Image (cartoon, rainbow, N blue to C red; front, side, top):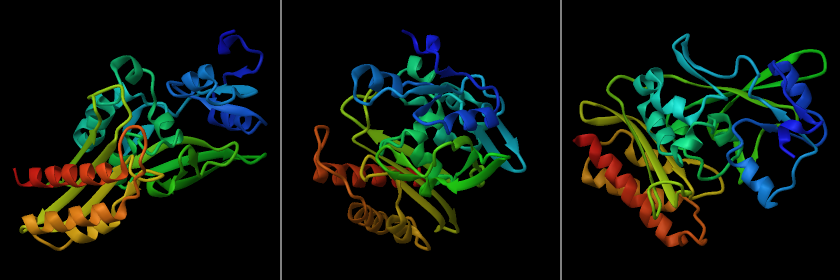
Length: 289
């Protein structure tokens, strides 16, 4: 039976209704469903007792500039993010990542909220959002009113498939400031084929130079730790230094040291360390071009 025909398929229209429904025992939240539905159909995870669809919930879609920030609704699809003029102007690194996820059919349905809440270490939008110092808006119904809190993207993930979301909480928006004028930001991922595959490793970097010296640095990694992670040691290796071959080598060494990859069917731990160093070096050398 299709999920839409189930007696426990809930279709709320407001964030309040959605969080109330999601707090119900055994309920799961569904946005695009591009990951959850295949897992349920294959029996990888148990189907929930109830399903809360977000497709008709008002106010958690769309992309806008508000008070100097870019605000992305959790229901914004990858196709929308890849092509949206606001994103392409303010954060092209995010548009690039969204446009390289899976295939057009998946991108037309998959949402950025689902990509983050699924909490895969390989989540393609997570690393660009780390570079952008993004903040996630979370809402919940406490029994008498709607409450909200914000969580930096770097603190949102707890482990593979796990986030800081409590029962009944809902990710509503992702917010970040546009890249500063003159800043360079880039992201890349590696796999044995260019699409429809989980990345063996992904790397992102954002830097800004002043007089030839790096005055701002952000580094992020995917698929090389239990969660998408910020490369703080690599950032220290870059800050207040010229973007020279020596600086890039220091950054690569720091990256190799701080990531925590595993060996699995897609790549070995050592191979992932090498891939991260190579990709990071390429991204940084492109700053000079």
